Length: 163
Image (tube, rainbow, N blue to C red; front, side, top):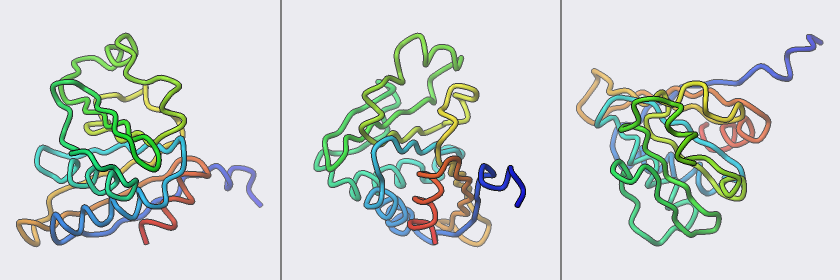
């Protein structure tokens, strides 16, 4: 067996034909999430990142309203596990995230969802689930989702939730 095989990330792709389906995918992730899960959401404005985050919140039994935290950078929500919802859209420099304490040890006991994660290149945890959401030419509400799971916990989550 190749000694690097166990550390190679796993990946996949799927489609969503509606905001409700995107939210259902997020719910499947949230339902199966364990402490320390980090979801890195990447995609253009209006792609469905916040819908996916709302679904994760549903799966975590969060009862508060989950909206994009663009102007405060991070919102924290109580649920089965705490949800740390980060929006990096307004960050000009990834170093800014570290200097303002956007990531800390509390998140190890919860689930962190990062919208615009590509703006934090180099500062995200090595173990995470990257999700790219892109509009698809097949229809107005159709989205193509690609994912890459890094680390055993994220691989297990993707294998259970994103089939």
